[in-house]
Length: 265
Image 1 (spheres, rainbow, N blue to C red):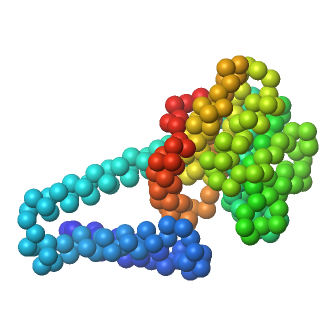
Image 2 (tube, one colour; image 1 turned 180 degrees about the vertical axis):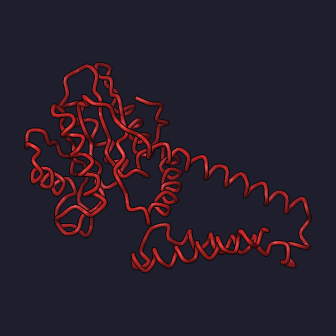
Image 3 (cartoon, rainbow, N blue to C red; image 1 turned 120 degrees about the vertical axis):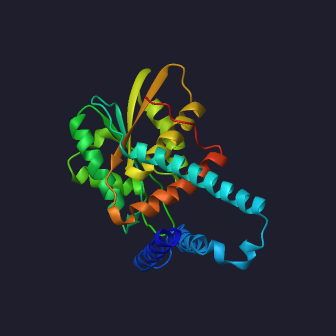
């Protein structure tokens, strides 16, 4: 029974690794996870036949099983939070819509970023009084900032220049949020702000936690900010990989102190 489950899953993981690798020239971050997962599944399938395991004290084998179970439980708990973020929506009457950068193709938004911009456009049409903050700096392979390309895209799609704010210094999601909050606080009148954060669906939960941390760092006693996640579509074939990558990124951002648990608007 164990082999019937683990061996097909190992082959599926290996196939997914090869498919992602070929389509991304084997340069995708965290790509080796799928290869390591396939090897782990094969190890589990043939666990009881390995001489080393047969000669290992039972208490040590049991300890390894407990560690694996605890690791899996933690992984699925974090992935549950990622799934929760994917279901988030925002109410009407938003004051600001923040769009997070996601790479460029030359001077134009990448496909992922265009999906975010299309979702933001829908929000802006539903919230005609809201302003939009596009956030993203210059990466090594681009000639313009993500914010510049995003602003141009919005202008081309009918958003008035006076509704667009830009943040063009950030290079990570943590910086997106850290650099954006002072701009929103400076632009807004004192009181309450409702802010929708538009990003790819798998990315919503972490973005909300990073934004919550940024708000604490730039706390303004005169302004209360209510955060809402707005999930943009993401290509389904690549989604499992990016959900797994998000697990590791959440762990890293937590260890770096960039995260604060999002407790709702």
